[in-house]
Image (cartoon, rainbow, N blue to C red; front, side, top):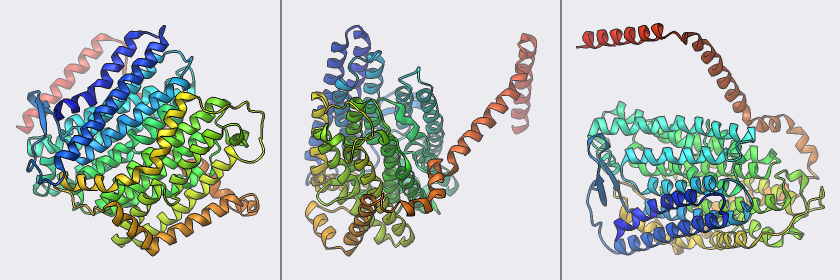
Length: 594
């Protein structure tokens, strides 16, 4: 039954993508119904798969030993097998992708009402949901790359969904180019693994990694780090995610907050046992996470676009997860991944309700919307408190686990910076909430509260932001039982609560958060201090120079392409001569090599 559930979880959304396209844009009601039905079905299959996996492993020794997948579909040749493995890491992330995907689709019923090209929109969303489930469930590095690239394609297509908007098209192209840099790193690692071991199986690679030549392992390790950094918008590839906010907001919630951007964190966690011993690899992971978390928090603090604030916040929180992996807190990083998926999807969909009601993303034009949108304000506040790390909400527990893991690792400078990041998170969050929902209205906006389908998605996610931390014990037990090559510091819910509430580091973090909240609340009285920070604020608005680097790279590529254009004479004889000359040179090289 489990093999069937895996295939249904992955391929049912793809069947829905085909049907919603066949239905045609002349029947939008049918398209909404197909998209909602197939996405919910995928979520149900993923939850049943999770439950059956939990039952199968509970209290038992592993039913398989070593490197074999749970089941595989032989394809032959260099493709190996389309293989899958039901371990805790994969099934939990598949459940996250499909459940939050279904909530984003339900939200879209109201958000995309009256929009043209619904078939294209829902087709790519459903294709993405299936690809993300396949990415985390497959045990083949080749098909990990295959699903990885499909998610990148869907991301590009959905960012550019409004293809008559130059900013949307530019944002999609930018995301595609930068994430493809990461795809090269992932493909390189998969090819090296196959060339060295003769298999694409992930667990076979984890088992035999110590026997690989150190140079090959190092290239694979840093190739995978580049892949993860590009996919998860980490330094120095962080600039694509804010521009991806040109996508419809449900896409931002699903792809650019809750699922695809977590793929890089998943990649690092999955392959950590193989690369942990590579010299300077863990230090590089820590550095990437720390720099990203701090820079993105600073950029969120000066942004005026509501969705861009949330985008920078996502980049920063992903930096916390990457940092957690670098210090060895694999379990803590994955718990925070779960928490973040829920509360950030809630925040993005809440922002979508605001945008849908007001028609603007500029927080400077808002103010006082809480009186007109009390339900949206209430659920948004729950997401904001989870993001900040207020006790009881899921973000509090997982963030404290991450900070505790960093403290235990002995990486003191990194820990101090991450504490500072927690204060900045509180500061930009209270600024965002107060600019949108409180104070006097700063313009005439005709707002209305979230509609019925929106409320369903927002309500479910709000409950999740309050309760998903209760899954920590079950999640940890399943991870410990099904990841034989990982050394995990797993704790149950009671142990997590006791250790968190009795640790002095928790109260230090809460004090930093409280200071950030206080400064944010009194920011108008501290305007003079803000003027002293005018120069670094300008740096933050320009992504600390990385946007300039992007522009220079684009300019260099254009210049080189203009130069290469002279080689295209349009004369067939010259083209044939060039091909023959290249063939002769290749044969000479082969002869000399032999």
